[in-house]
Length: 382
Image (cartoon, rainbow, N blue to C red):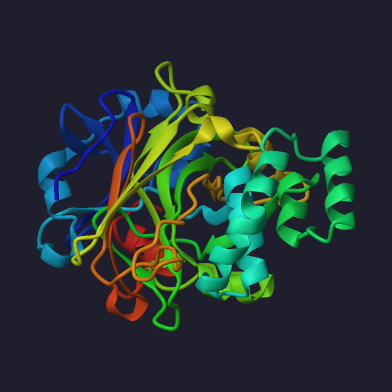
């Protein structure tokens, strides 16, 4: 697998070094340089520094190989376990996500709810009310007086939904996407539960937030989603979102520095490309400039005085992409097939590529925080 990284910036990777363990690495001159130390034993430690980018730029380290070679070995189906490969660039941070942050995806969540997980019924509902709701809500500021007036009108028309509440109401939807250290990196398989027959990728920007609440950088993410499960009931959100290998983040963390800031995240265009063994191809995009809630507001609603995370957080910001293109049946919309290759990319953050399999057929998650602590202690890094 060819690895695609940004052409500039302070790029941080986690690299699995066989026989050693996970390393914190900075990309320099086409190589991954291991800068793991007692001061920065984890990416969490790096993000907690006053100047993460400055530290990474000057830290001494050891090359563990070229980015091209490590990337080529990261594709799970062809991996040589004796050679290094890329991991998700987060480690001890909690993995959180925001939903319904774009008007377009908000409409799809309302449709899912009304269809109760039936894609054929969703097609009919979409044709009747989708465009109307989208036109009504696209320029609203969540929580504003204007938004509350629209809420009142929609309630009167019988169109109000819990998804509209978090979409245009004062409070963002923030949920736990995955357990700490369960996210997979570029090249890894991503999982869908075999009980699902209607599911999709979600291309998103992922913020890296220090324990202070300061946003220090960003990566790409795939918030794999079971649409039929979530559509049956919002109370099944955890069942729809959190299974083995359903959180993909990568290929690297790009730290904020002189070349990259939160303003770049705000205007980022995130592209999606899906290729299936059946010849199906789907392209989509998510334009961060269309987000209804500012990324810093999402971060502040996630980590604050009432929600303390001492190891910080990574936060999926939601997506504008709505998977409405038919794949198997007319009006059935999109759903994954086993073997689909999903690439999420942006000019600023590179490309995150994963292949879709059933959750049980992905590499079993067997290295958690306890294993990392034992590993670091054995390496004399604690």
